[in-house]
Image (cartoon, rainbow, N blue to C red; front, side, top):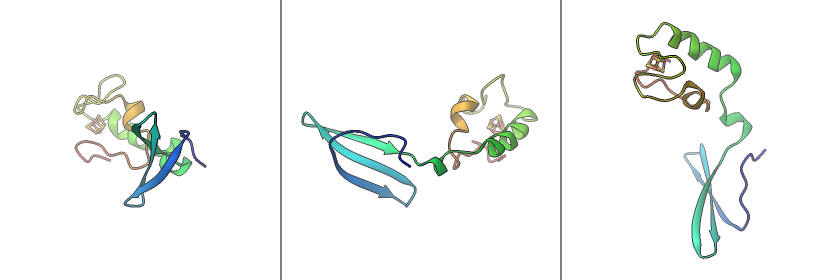
Length: 88
Ligand code: SF4
């Protein structure tokens, strides 16, 4: 299931069988759109496990990581997410 779609596709590029990028030409401008499948996103179980590790981490701030500065909601969006210091 494609979750992001842009009209006027010209080609689909797959990088390492993970990232799918569609290349489009709109009004003469090349536009690259990353395409995500449902399986690309972290499950709620994954996020809970990661968050429980963050809860005991010295870098945890209210809703973000004090090490990389990312909001947890953004940092943990994809199944391939990683802690910046490899705690999860
Ligand atoms: S360094 Fe890793 S474990 Fe610590 S708050 Fe950031 S993401 Fe979580």
